[in-house]
Length: 367
Ligand code: OGA
Ligand code: NI
Picture 1 (cartoon, protein in one colour):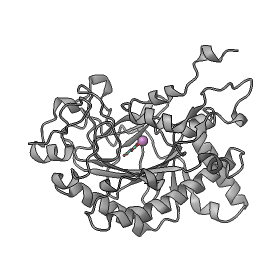
Picture 2 (cartoon, helix red, strand yellow):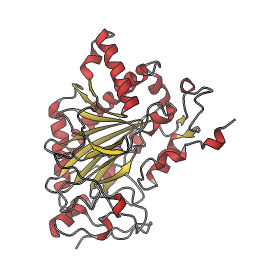
Picture 3 (cartoon, helix red, strand yellow):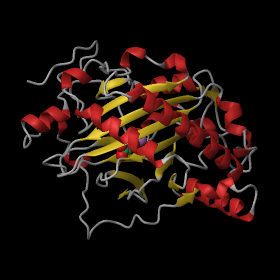
Picture 4 (cartoon, rainbow, N blue to C red):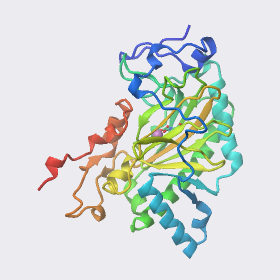
């Protein structure tokens, strides 16, 4: 029998999705079956909307100093952020072996026996550890996904009890990977700043002790992917997010664009990057954090390793003066990022609703 997690919140019984697929591969418990209006539209090869035009940024062009190539790529990045909120980054310079290692240890972790993984439980209402995040009530639908999430930086946010001692080299590999991805995030934020006409250190100056967290998402195959959701629609509460998809995984990520959900076809060894809520607020909505979700697959499992990079919790944020004028009044109030994070992690994922926290409503905005 699948174990019951005891928590101070009344979230009811939470089935472990991997165990479900092992023991009752054809049964989809009611709690995973979405209401008709929330079910994913699945695309077959012929009905799939075009996805090949998601911008691809060649990171190596940023490394050649302030050349014309550099400027062209900065403009391309700026337009990707403004028009898409999502892009892929190739030639990012992170060793392919490291990408393979993080994939391997993540997969090995998810393949451990349940009892082993449950030594690192995600207590409902919190976001670190193994389990299902963002579950707050008994009647809430569950995602077809197992997650393992850890805070990386600043160090004081780590909960050492949640860092697994199996598989071997887990911590070492995650540490090395996170260092590299952190540098990539910092560099990308510099280039994003330049593309916005800001000083390159505009974001790093503002972010203080930037927060970095990682979440490994494991989506087991599902006999009825048309009824369930891999990961509920949401925008990310980060400044930017870096997503790595394990080699051989089927397409699963979808972004909401022009009122439809379009699948993202990952490029091997590239990262999928997206703008999070912080950048939307700082740019007063010039760049938007686009809603996205993940769908399940009937035959194949899927693994993603997702890094969230965000300002320090002590930081006060609001639209930057550069993006506010008479014609473009502030759409968001100033707030403390720690409070925003708390708001984000203590509410269920529901599209872009989390940003309501900071939105100024039109009527308050009219003088
Ligand atoms: C996330 C996310 C998508 C995926 O973890 O925030 O959007 O494909 N993941 O796993
Ligand atoms: Ni996301």
